[in-house]
Amino acid sequence: MIIKSSTTLRNDYNSISNLAHEKNEPIYITKNGEGDLVVMSIDAFERREELIRLQAKLEAAEESRLCGEPTVSLDEARARLKEKYANG
Image (cartoon, rainbow, N blue to C red; front, side, top):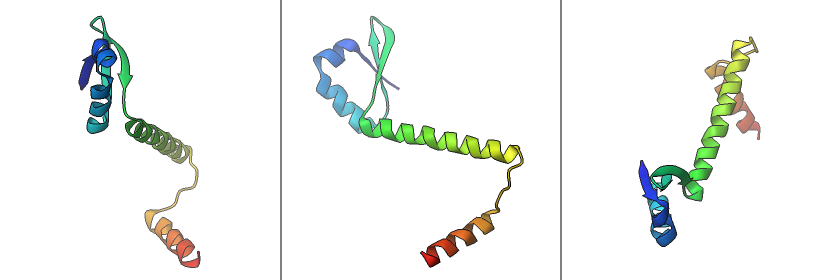
């Protein structure tokens, strides 16, 4: 976990920006010793958002399975994909 003060952000933005891009993880910014903000690169943010969307899709699929929706075996899914791309 990377923690920096708001003073560092204010006085040395470039170092915070470089750190965010180098580490690809959130930087926690404190104000008066308390947590205040989280800063991250756009790339890290977009990867995080994509992961959240993927988790939501997986949860929806699992919920459908638990509710008795029809499922497809891995072998059947592979066969369908091979057929689709062979004809595509």
